[in-house]
Length: 86
View 1 (cartoon, helix red, strand yellow):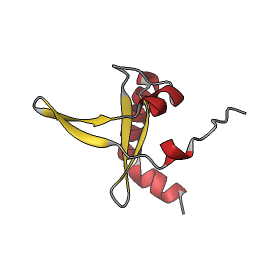
View 2 (cartoon, rainbow, N blue to C red):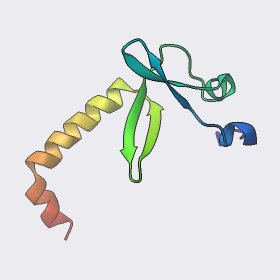
View 3 (tube, rainbow, N blue to C red):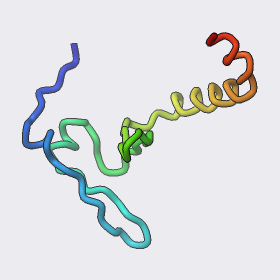
């Protein structure tokens, strides 16, 4: 199983929002980047969660394309899926 050893200092860490030019960015602790195998220039996929939360995952263009297709299908066949869910 692919388990990471969690560092309590990183678990309780926070990310700081900083102004970078005309945009804003998040500052990640170096130890967290190493643990998550992230490097400068990597892209993250952002999913908004309830209660002002975020879920960040590495960006995968194949997954993103699959989700785009699924969203179109759900929208096109919304009534069918609603009936199947009963």
